[in-house]
Image 1 (cartoon, rainbow, N blue to C red):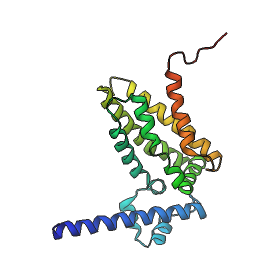
Image 2: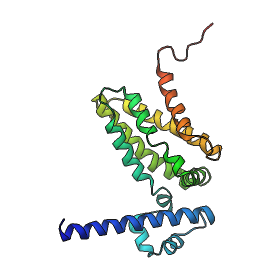
Image 3: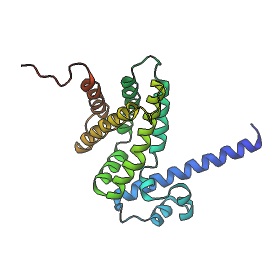
Image 4: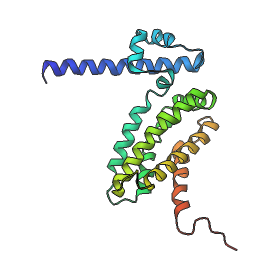
Length: 209
């Protein structure tokens, strides 16, 4: 390793540490003071950084609230790419999403805070759907299109599958949040995602007379 590599490594580590301090400070203030009542000045002071440093990492309070979700999005991409090549596409998506589901158990307080604020604050709800969920959906669309060897603009299947997966995940999150995070989120997510395959299986929706 060269001196330049070492310097760059320390610089990157400091950026990650600063970013995490800001995310943690924001979560604490949002939970104790309230989202609307907390300012970016408050967050910067709590994280012991200048406000301009905060804005170098995050453009808005909503981005701060979901600041740890980008790592999960990257993990989702890796999980989708690592699935066996001959695995049915719906199972690829189900298993990849489920591989990240235990994050809700490990970070229950953070995930409950995000969900509750999204339900109560319009700007948070809009950011969650337009930025966070949309970015996850794009990862699934790209992975499914690659698996099917198709153009997702011309072929509706990747977007339909991704949309169904995200809808299932939203249902699981709503059930888990309503129960105060006490339920097993992996089980809830598995049930919701499995319902997609159940509904698309032969004979689904038929009624015996």
